Length: 289
Image (cartoon, rainbow, N blue to C red; front, side, top):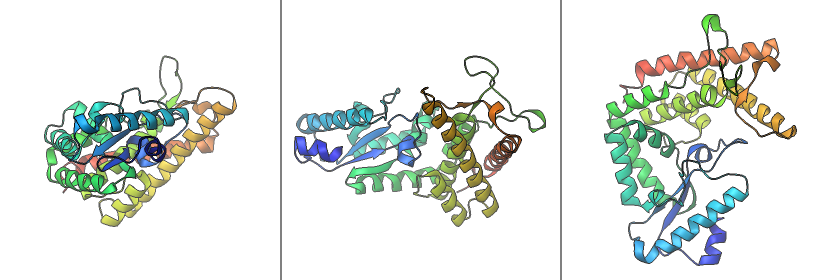
């Protein structure tokens, strides 16, 4: 899409990189994923002279992604928004502010933007930004402590005696949120390990494997988390595929009543792994570095 836009508009007036973030940046999209993206522009960018070119490019690519099934981000975290289409120096300022003053919004934005992956253009722009921000995050124990605390907001749905704690009311009563109660906690742990060790990997599986090699997580802990991630992610995708086959809109809310006893026990084991590893992260990662 970026190449097609440039065929229509001509070559870019300054260097740029189109980057995906969130699940698209991690290469972990599902049937309900939206698009999250941004443009990092060279500091030679002049808003008056070059603004129209990149505004049009962002609209063309974003519209194309939506037509292909990656719908517009409800939070407007896309390159079509002026805030997310800025020169490298502005992006550096964003990350310095998020790391230096980790408010709730800053932590949310950092969680998304630490998952940036270059898609098209000059990846060196992103590489330099990533190197600087990872180093700053490693140096700032207060920021990491906030990120650990923020990640613990997503708890696996385990009740007393390891029973599954289901949603109690509303449209999704008696279901499990497989995204926020299952996938997201592991994604958050992978990001925390990456920040703690200065790892450049973005994909969750690659982060966990790299963290194991770096000694940030034990071999058994990494193996258990990877197995838990695969099981939960596969169940989530199977649930979404089933809804699509039935002509229904895919979602993240699965009713465990349809699982066999074996599947249910495996799912509880996976949630138990998350709970154990979250406790370990709370004790170690907030002050590591």
